[in-house]
Every structure is written in structure tokens, then in C-alpha cells.
Image 1 (cartoon, protein in one colour):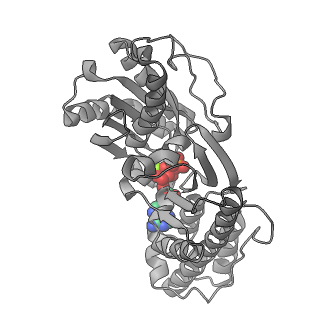
Image 2 (cartoon, protein in one colour):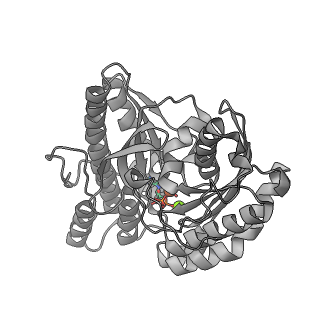
Length: 365
Ligand code: ATP
Ligand code: MG
Ligand code: FE
């Protein structure tokens, strides 16, 4: 199978081509990601309308580049996969409609992929990761624990009730005068700071389950900074170190509980946890997770950074996994354009993974 994937749900315009055999062995023929960071930096965060316009301007060229790099003709494609949600709706519309047009033109199936499912299955593209496993998704828009039971079977075990961790890093950076994106900037400052200077809160940790909260943490940083006006560079470093320490603490304790929950569900399976999302690049958080995993005899799997942040290879892969299953049941699916595919699926801003099979129809052929 040769699959073109398209991703436009946030601030990356991305296209990729994968070659997958029926056993699931995968070669990434191309993986083009254009980050719109420069467009959004002046505003200190992603501006939805600017993102949507940028996707319109960029996507044709990015798809072209992905196809050329892969050295694949449109007629060679077996299917087209695109993110259909969740995400910023303007961008999702651009990507899904482009994918539908290509699928229609070459008369091949269109696969509407849930962006979160893309993150959830990425590790299976690069490593031999058998179901079931835990997924910790930590990005700018999401912070959640998922139980990945089987293809298409996901259960959300816990989530942030307010800010995502990446968002908390970005907001903390902004209020301390550090550049966007905040994650790398805060991590760099934290290396020069003392994490014991400020006692920041660890919200919700006393509650059962796996829910988390990070909005209060960011507010606590603001309150501490206001008390110290004017804020010196050392204060910024100490605040960043204390903030990062608090986040690592929360994620470490929650992950310990996630491993316990996994062991209760699957007493005979050694626990595994895949980490994905931009925040997974954070060294302090990674070190903490590795410690916790070791304490629980669990395996921690971190796919290469380029595949952990938003990209189209993961969307093509999620589409491929689904398509492989369908083809195994009925090989004629590849010829049945318009019958078995997702051409009628609508772009959607919200699409929880546990409601994956709920079809939303609109903008069809
Ligand atoms: P989503 O994938 O949820 O749609 P997104 O595009 O914001 O949203 P990613 O591209 O996966 O997500 O990750 C970007 C986020 O990761 C930003 O919030 C950024 O600050 C954060 N981040 C990147 N590097 C680090 C780091 N070293 N430490 C902490 N956070 C980081
Ligand atoms: Mg992004
Ligand atoms: Fe993402």
C-alpha cells in the first residue's frame, strides 16, 4: 500500500507518503513538515485565522514536495488519509477538503483520521509495539492518558481539566518575558535555576484517577513573579526550574498510577507506555518518567522527536493501519471508491477518541 497523509489541524502544514506491506512493515518515503512558528511568533501563540490562511497557501506545495521526494505518481497511491479533527476547524477543513479532492481525482479511498489516533499509533510505525499499551500525549493542545487496547479501541483514562502542559509552558514563558514557543525556552532557563526556591502547587494530585490541572501552576508563577518586581534573570531561572519540577512531579506521580491501573487490567502483560507530543522532548520530564517506569518494571517508548510532534506520517500510518484491516477483510475495498471510504465524513473541531466510530456527515461528494 502507498498512502499519502495530510495534517493541518494546528500550526503545522504537513504531507507524507508511506509504503506499507500487508505485514505492516513501513517505509517513510517522505515526511514534509512546515511549521508556521514564524507566522505566529509575533502573537505569542497560534492565531486560528492566520493558521487557516497559511494552510491554504502552503498545502498544495507541501503535498507536491512530499510526492516528488517520495518519487511517487498520484496514480500509484492506494489511498489518501487526512486529519478530520480534532483541531482548529479552519485548518482541518483545508486539509480534509484537499485530501478529498485528490482521492476523488484518482478514484481511490479517502480515510478520515482522528489526529489523536495518529499520535496514539505512531510508536507502531517505528517500533514493534503490540496492543495493549498506555499513551501519554503531552502537547500544546492535549494532555491525556489513553489506554490503547486495540486498533480503534481507545479509552481515555485521564486528562487535564484546564491547560495542556505545552500551553502551560508557553503561557509561563510569555509572562516571564521568554520567547515563543515556551517549552524549549523554559527548559533552558530551568537548567540555570534552583527548583527548590519556590513552592509551587501540585493541583489534583490528592484526587483518585488520572486527571490533572495546570492552570493554577501558571497563576502561581505569575503571583510569585509579581512579588519580586523587578524580576531578575536569576528569579526567572528559579521560577522556570520550580515550574518544570512541579510539572515533572505531577506527570511522574500520575504515570505511576497509570502503570498501576494497567497492571490491574492486564495482570499478565508487562506495562508499556508510549510518550508523544512536543512536551515529550523535555529532558527533565523524560528523566522522571524513566525513573517511574523502572520502579514499575515498565517499558517507556519514545518515538523519534520528529514523529512525536505534529506530522503527516503519523496520519498516513493511522490510515494505513485501518486500511490494512479493511483490505484483509475485503480486498475489493481499494476499488470501491465511494462505498467503503470516508468521503462523506465532515471536518470537526472536537472528536474524542472514545467516540471514534461516531460518524459526522457533511461536505460529501
Ligand atoms: P497538538 O499536537 O495538541 O495539536 P501542538 O501543535 O501545540 O498541538 P506539538 O507540536 O506536539 O503540539 O508540541 C508543541 C508544544 O510542545 C508547545 O506547547 C511547546 O512549548 C511544547 N514543547 C516543545 N519543546 C518542549 C520542551 N523541551 N519542554 C516542554 N515543552 C516543550
Ligand atoms: Mg504544533
Ligand atoms: Fe498533535
